[in-house]
Image (cartoon, rainbow, N blue to C red; front, side, top):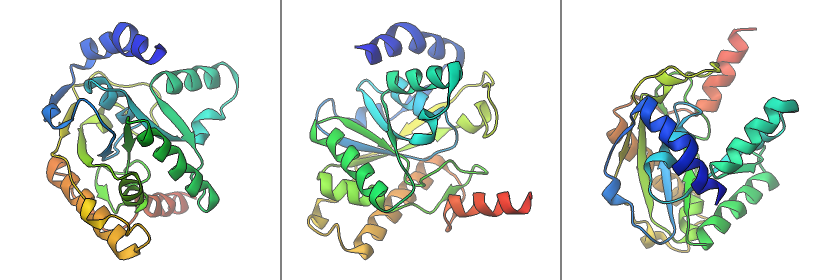
Amino acid sequence: MFYWFMKNLIAGPILRTAFRPWVTGSENIPQTGALILASNHLSFIDSIFLPLVIDRRVTFLAKSDYYTTRGIKGWAVKTFLKATGMLPIDRSGGKASEASLKTGLGVLARGEVLGIYPEGTRSPDGRLYRGRTGVARMVLEGGVPVIPVAMIDTEKVMPIGKRLPKVKRVGVVIGEPLDFSRFEGMESDRFILRSITDQIIYELSQLSNQEYVDVYASTVKERLGSSSN
């Protein structure tokens, strides 16, 4: 109820008026049934504008760091994230990754829409990076279709490191559903997982027109961090 209230009566109308988001391909999203929205990731606000233009509720798996900030700011961030349908996950790997997978599968088991960023983190420079195979595992174990989604110009509205957004128009391009049911039962095959992930990333590159870089975005961020020290 709080999610609907925020999206339709408070935050939604304000954001639509200020940023005038445009969307194409909304007819590709079915009105019922579980599915995964696999999106490129240019800005923190991707998780805000994508649900805004989708008629159905979208649940994102957000890194748990967002939920650990203390004080009034921390409370405000946590309240906003919960209101917009984000669930905290631990991205440290190992058992944490399995817990994240279980959390996502729980959303799909309820017949809902799960939002995932295959790159695993925001792009450091606006280019599209190598996908993490967790999205492929989620697709196969959940037995659901995946719909590629390209966020357009969100990095211009709120670049990494900026606290306040600029008022610019943003866009959302929704592709056609991808069916990987032919790989059912093969979620332990790392070659299959890589193939599925690469196809999803390829579709994102076609929708977004981003330059593709065949390395992980997290690796590039680590290099940039090291070079600045």
